[in-house]
Amino acid sequence: MSDWQSRLARVEPLEDIPLDPELVRTLEAAHGARFDGGATPVDLYTPTFKTYQTSEIRSCGKNAWPAVSVTGSHCKLQCDHCKGQLLEPMIPATTPGALWEVVQGIVADGGRGMLLTGGSNHRNEVEYGPFYDTIRRIKDHFPDFRIALHTALVDDDTARCMEQAGVDTAMMDVIGAQETITRVYHLRRSVEDFEATLEALVKTRMKVVPHIVMGLHYGRFLGEWEALRMIRRHPPDAVVLVVVMPFYAPERKPFATPGAGEVGRYFLEARRTLADTRLLLGCARPAGEIKGAMDAYAVMAGLDGIAHPADGIVELATRLGRRARVIPACCSMTLGEAGAPGADLEIDLEAVIADERARHRGAGVAPGGIPVVAAGG
Image 1 (cartoon, rainbow, N blue to C red):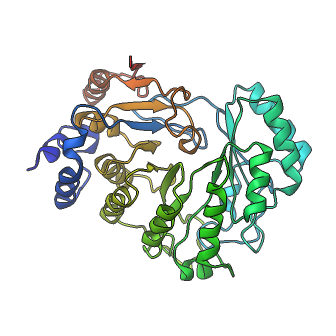
Image 2 (spheres, rainbow, N blue to C red):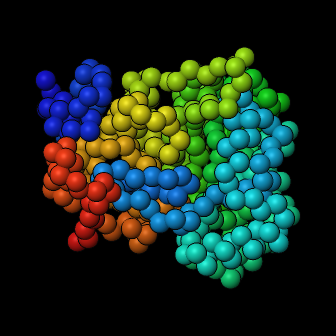
C-alpha cells in the first residue's frame, strides 16, 4: 500500500469509495513531493447556485452569488444534454429594466455578484446587446458587485462590448470535436469558431475562465484533449473542468456517466498540459460515491480548487499536505485572488476529525458546524 493509499484509508467518509490503486500511485508519483509542507493550497468554493452543506463546511450565505438569465428559460439550441432546462431555476431578467431591478434586489439581500447567462440563438450566441448599457449602469452604481458572464460564441467586437460594459469574468465552453458541436449542440459552427472566441476574449481586460465539459459527447471523451491544446494556445486566467450531467437528455439519445477513473486520468493530463494555469473542478458533476471519487482524484491531481467538495475532501487535502481554504463564492469569480471573500480562511483539521468521529459515535453533533480559522499568513 502506498503512502497516499494509507492516508486515504484514514478518511472515514471516503473509506468505502472505490479508488483505482494504480491511479493513486501515479498521482502520488506526480505530486506527492510538492504537496508536502502545505505549499500547494486547495481552495474549496461554496457558491449559492444550489443548496450545499457537508459535515466539514457550513452552508454558504443565501443569494450571495445567484444565477440570472436574460432569456428566462428560453433557449433555441436545445442541446441534447440540457434542452434549456438548466435555465429553469435561474432568476429571469428578460429586459434591461428587469435586470436592473433584479440586481438591486440581490445587492439589498447582501449579494456580492451574479452569474449572468441566457439561452442561445441558433448560432450559439446569447443576445446581450440590449443589456450592455444596464450592465455598465450596474457597475457604475455598485463597483464592488462582480459579474461573471457566460459569453457563448463571440467575435472581437462583441468581446470588446462586454469588456466596455464592465463584465468582470467571461466564461465559455471550449469544445474540441466537430462531431460533438454538430450532434450534441445542433450547431453549424466549427471547432475554429470556439478557438476564435477564446482568442477574442483573452485579448480583453476581462478575466477569462473557459470551461471544459468532460464526457460531453454522450458521456464519452472525444474533443477534451484538443480543448486542452486550444486553451494552451490562448492562455486564460483559469480553467474550470466539469462533468456532463444530462438530466434532461432524450431517451433516444442517452448519455453514459463517465467513470471516476477516466475523469481522474483526465485531471492528470490537464494538470500536465496546463501546468501554469489555475485549474478548477466546477460544481457540475454527478452526485453520490462517484463524486467523492472524482473529488479525491482532483485533490491528488493537483487541481487548484473544487466547488462544492464532497464529504471527506477537506480532511483528505490536509492529510496530503495541502492547505484547505474555504471561499464562499463561485470559483470562476474569485480565482483565488488575494483579498477575495473568504480567501483568508482555512479549515481546522482537528475540529473536522473530532466532529466526524462524534457523528459516527452518534453523539448528536450537528453537521456543518466545523469552524474555519484565520490562516495567519
